[in-house]
Length: 126
Image 1 (tube, rainbow, N blue to C red):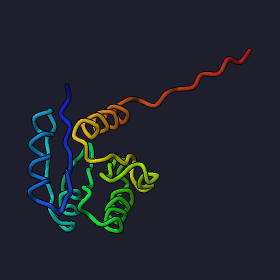
Image 2 (image 1 turned 180 degrees about the horizontal axis):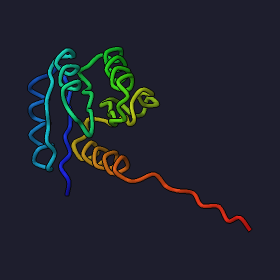
Image 3 (image 1 turned 120 degrees about the vertical axis):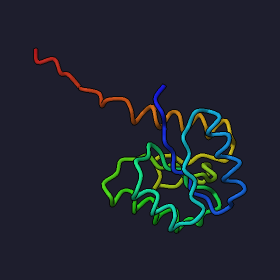
């Protein structure tokens, strides 16, 4: 199993610490940022496999962070933790609710999808 480095961004430091403990127990390396500026600084200085934007962050700030990540040329998947039943957050690769199992499953699926090489379509020229 390869190591997965996650930037977890949330403004509720207690909740962020609690979730980080769970993610670490599942084998993720978690770098926590409890402010928007810290998240930007960490992202610029790190090499992350996944970015989690916590539900304590205002929607507009989530959009800004996701835009900054994409503007940097990074293809790092971004997960917005929010209510996915509201059509999700279009700026994120996935919108997942705060349920621990669903979140871990979604994190795993997104990292695995990124790791897969793109499919090569072969046509039959007959």
